Amino acid sequence: MTKPVPKWLMKRYAKLWVKFREKEFGFNDALKILKEKDERVISVAIAELRKNGWLIFEKDPHDARKRLYRLKSPNKAVEELFE
Image (spheres, rainbow, N blue to C red):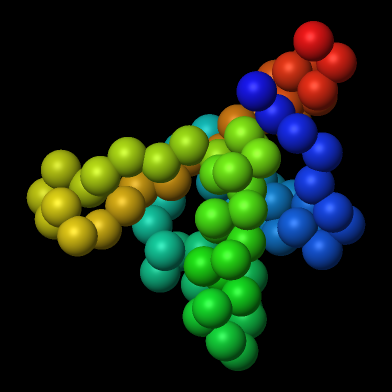
């Protein structure tokens, strides 16, 4: 179930969506796109997107220490907001 997110988080979601759409990406990919000076900002953004249902993650099949992320489409997210 998707929940509303604050503007600062939606901006980061939008940047990631433009680049990846529904493709998988890793933390380092997000780091390159979001261009934050502090990696903790990206960690928080990913955690908040996941908590609010805008992002799904799974373990990397090649390295269990890493995660692969996939964004939920904006259309699907908005539909879920109003269910």
